[in-house]
Image 1 (spheres, rainbow, N blue to C red):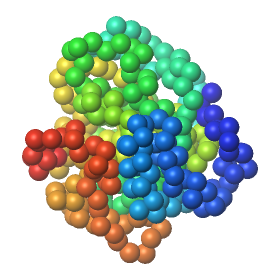
Image 2: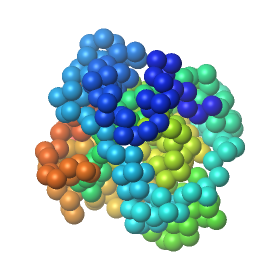
Image 3: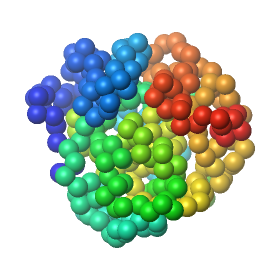
Amino acid sequence: MLIKKPADIRPSEITPPELYARRREFLKTAAVLGAAAILPPALGGRIARAAADDNLKPTPYQDVTTYNNYYEFGSSKSDPSENAGSLKTKPWTVTVEGHCEKPGQYALEDFLGSQTPEERIYRLRCVEAWSMVIPWQGVPLNKILPRFQPTANAKYVEFTTLLDPAQMPGQRTRLLSWPYVEGLRMDEAMHPLTLLVTGLYGKELPNQNGAPLRLIVPWKYGFKSVKAIVKVRFTEQQPRTTWSSENPDEYGFYANVNPAVDHPRWTQKKERRIGDLFRRDTLPFNGYAEQVAGLYAGMDLRKSF
């Protein structure tokens, strides 16, 4: 049940990636980011305008699916597409635990419930100063988490990737401490832009892009968007996330896209959009500042990076 295409779009208009370019005017409207249907009118309008201003032309499907960071399958950008094809994603189980009233192990279909995937086109910004524009399909996280009735002690949400070295050759190395763990503050997790992704370009999510279930938080660097999720845990304390634990001087817990705070190895002031010839200025919060900056009011984002 992973992907249900919108009823008003024929499969012939969705499946071939090259046809996405013909839908740009449609995608620049509120449907671009799923805004008109699922967000308050004022917020939806701002998102649609931001999309139009940035001319969100989707990155070609070939690039989206062959240029990835997914260290479970290797450290080269091409390793995920070369090594992930045999990953078994059906059946898939997601464990829910921690501070909630309905913990348990859920088949993916039950975890997602009856929610129909929505189409969003989001910018994706890597901390390595490259970016893409990707048409995702998924379910807003704020439509999923309340079903498990988190308690008042649930201040954060922790996400864990599958641990299976037999299928994920990168996990046989000591590149990172496995399994991969990421986390969000509860208000970040419940923000309307935060998406649990099950597909892209109108197709089921490819293995190399995080199938069958990954997170997308479009105002944060890509390493926050954990892939192949098998566990969701509600916590009272800030989770110990993988990159932040490995190198806290380079990778913060929040990881908000911020051109004013450089990574020691990459400037964050500009980025290379995959497929473009020239570099472009990086936007605060990856272009979603109007929607999300209020989450961090009063915080020093140079220290809480």
